[in-house]
Image (cartoon, rainbow, N blue to C red; front, side, top):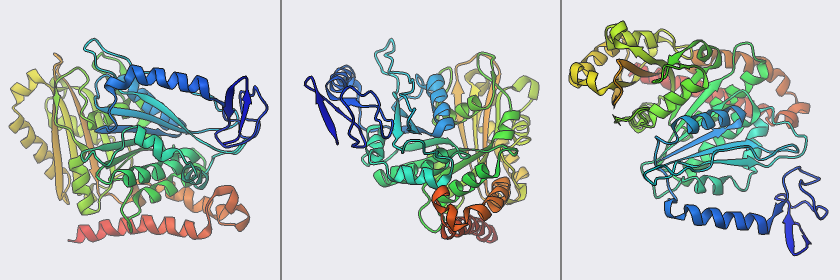
Length: 453
């Protein structure tokens, strides 16, 4: 690294650009100049405070990539950080000339002495004034980032942890989210091959430009890679338009929408119960079943805060959730169903778990004629209301249907991207465009073959 010495203090630019003494930001790339003495003093102080609580592996690692992904993980940490233990929260965003360290929550020690999971920020270096507007550029920046592997390891991704789940949240319309998300999961897989990887992807709204849908289609292709080991075991797709129309109710009676709905979904998959209680939720069961059958893409259906007294039965609450899937589905092609239901303890004793599971199984079989497998997991809370939270994930629909709007935008936009003069601008080549389409087609063809068995 290039360094200058001023008053016995070394200052450096992470990208090795020389700068005048006293500079705060690099004149070339805009990254903050590092003052070794100050940073080392802060690091040693933080280490001394946290050393008794630090573990170098986590059962669950939550990662947000891109602007929207960082917001989702920040919301998840704020709402659920004190509940989801043995976990870590990481935000990954691209840096630039005007990039400043973003605000994030420091660890808080609770009354019982435990420390809430950390929320940290990693900035992917990029050149001054470069706009990461496209998938190819975001992918290249992530691949060129020398610090990404180290950050993942320090966030708890560790090969010694055999039962580990990495949950990545991202909006796939922008360049950083669409491009860096698949590569981040790829690195997590390389660091810990034992890990289960879940990608929660928010797809662009229908009225967003074709470039956003182009990005999302490219990202889906690289996340699945059906001819290789997919970098994600479970791909959960939610269209922004549909997500905007869904509402839920929190345990405190507040309305839940958009990011908060996804936070509840991810937290429930991770085994969190909002007001105490117990959970057997583990997405590893679904990941193992889906991988064995070649089914990785799932569409969520949510019913959060439904009154059992009003709806009359769990089956009716299931119907309420199923009426508004967060992406297009084909009921006839659903082969895998994952139902996660949270009920109050007092109601669980009245319903009896065996009876409840029988009702859920009947609904499953009656709703999906091609169903080949299902996972039903229960959570019990200590709440006194009759509130039920229900999460339904459905797999088996082709991406030609689930991601149809993304494919339309991809088809229109690739005529511009495929021109040789634009390759550097968009970060993709005509050959890579062909490979992207082939990957999606291969995934859909695999579903057809599995259905024929």
